[in-house]
Structure formats: C-alpha cells, structure tokens
Amino acid sequence: MACTGTPPWGQSAPWRRSTPPRTPSSSGILPERHTRDDLRANLETRYEEYSVRSIEVVNRHFDDWFFFPELRWTVEARQDANAGQSFHDHTAEYAEVSAAGLVVAHIGHGTDQSKFG
Image 1 (cartoon, rainbow, N blue to C red):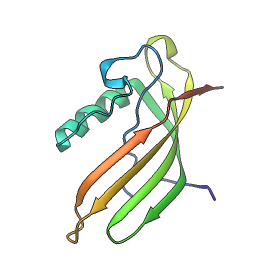
Image 2: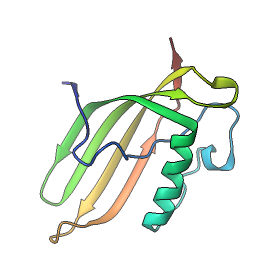
Image 3: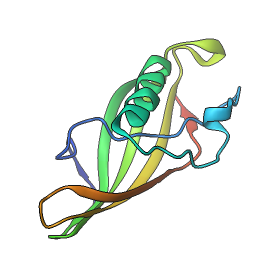
Image 4: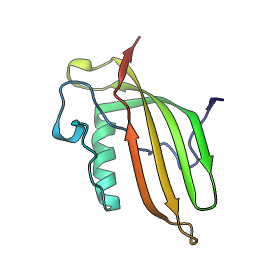
C-alpha cells in the first residue's frame, strides 16, 4: 500500500542523479560518505541541480534497531539541457540505529530517473 507524506526525518534523504550528462558524482558508483560534511556537500549539489516537487512514501518499515524507507521522488531540473523538465526516481535506504538512537550504519540506492510530463 502506498502512502504520501514527508519522511519522519524531513526531506533531506539523498537521491542519485542519472540523466545525461553524467558526471563522476552521478556515474552509478556508490560514493563513500563518512561524515556529515560529506553528506551535506552531496545534498547541496543535488539541490542546486533539482527542485523537489514531491516525495511519496512507497514502503517503510521501522523497528527499534533499524529503519527502511522506499521513496518516490518527483523533481524538476534547474539547469543544463534538462532545465524545467520533470523526472521520477525511487530511493531505498537501510539504516541501523544504536540503543542510544544514533544511526551507526547507513546504505542507500537510487534508480535511474524517468522523464515525464
């Protein structure tokens, strides 16, 4: 069952750009991000490239030691040849949470984007 809404952690989940032209950061290779500064830099780059139009929660599961959200993103390109065009893609993430409530492990993946509209 699909539901809509904002993820409980806000709208800061990363997604992977995969429309031409491809850059090293969007090559399909899973980048390593070890610090909050690494994640911040990645997100700032993505938000410069795209405006988020909506995020739909496709699936989610939360437990006391992990969480798993699958999200459908609708974005609009801000620049390059795709400026003004809309795209969909999905992200899935898995994170383990310590007894103190801190994320101790996190991995995510995004699908290729599909143009619509």
